[in-house]
Image (cartoon, rainbow, N blue to C red; front, side, top):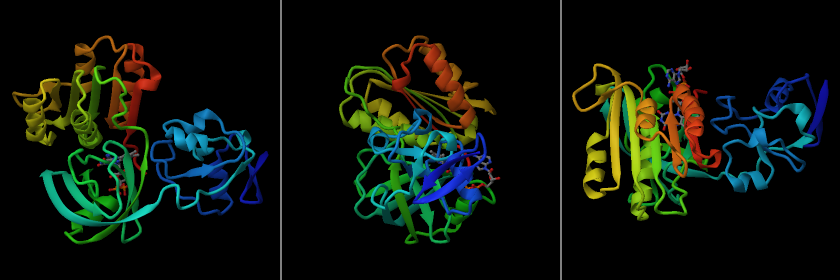
Length: 319
Ligand SMILES: Cc1cc2nc3c(=O)[nH]c(=O)nc-3n(C[C@H](O)[C@H](O)[C@H](O)COP(=O)(O)OP(=O)(O)OC[C@H]3O[C@@H](n4cnc5c(N)ncnc54)[C@H](O)[C@@H]3O)c2cc1C
């Protein structure tokens, strides 16, 4: 047994138990989602030291404030914890202003968010009026008005947020909270190569990052490799083609596993990207979408020479 203090109370925890698990077992209401360190729903703060492994993927400003992922911290590794004040991640009122199905399972939702200030590539927590909340990445192109966000949402039949969005109509109210994560254009050297790899709606943050980089005048090569199960599930190709026409330093390749059309490559975007970019020293690498692709990508890109601090990833782990 071990124990820590939570907002003035002593919490007993089993050996090896996480902070989140001990708190939930004790009947404390702690928001949480994937419990795999990806969605950042369970953030808490500690005034004492916090293991770095419980801060993976957090922005430096959060790390400095002792904020950590309670699903990743072992109870035995912390002395105290408390919930975050509302001002750390404020909530903004949002209104659905446009909704388009771009394939039979991808909805592009645009929302007007009063007081919002961009952040293409990072993710927010979308709250529906019926109390469901889920993380979604910001696809919003950098030239969109700052008070608008655009999300690419894969519709999962029966999924709580999927069904909320399916039935939502223009004018419906939502809230967004955030932004979270580190996936955004953060290059200081405008010549450095950028490699982006994703699957499914993992295109959302990658598109946000590419447009932000191009708008900020990035001059180095930017290469996007993006895949889906079948060619019919690949979307946004016209938008991407438009970018290649306007920016010679940007190129993209599309991949599908089956029912592959002429312009797409067969197989995985990760393998395709690494075939073309065998040595990744000096690259910034972004990986988004299916958790297996992201996990394999982090390992393979590191082995190909990318520095760990230059690999940014958001795995779309389900709640
Ligand atoms: C950091 C982060 C960023 C994300 N960004 C995006 C994004 O930009 N676009 C996007 O579409 N999603 C994104 N996701 C996933 C998203 O948060 C939800 O998990 C997803 O939309 C399903 O929510 P739901 O409420 O519709 O389904 P739920 O009610 O959560 O799930 C219903 C059922 O479907 C299963 N399920 C959930 N997801 C999948 C899946 N992908 N494939 C198969 N079965 C599934 C669940 O296990 C459950 O059994 C992101 C996740 C994370 C952690």
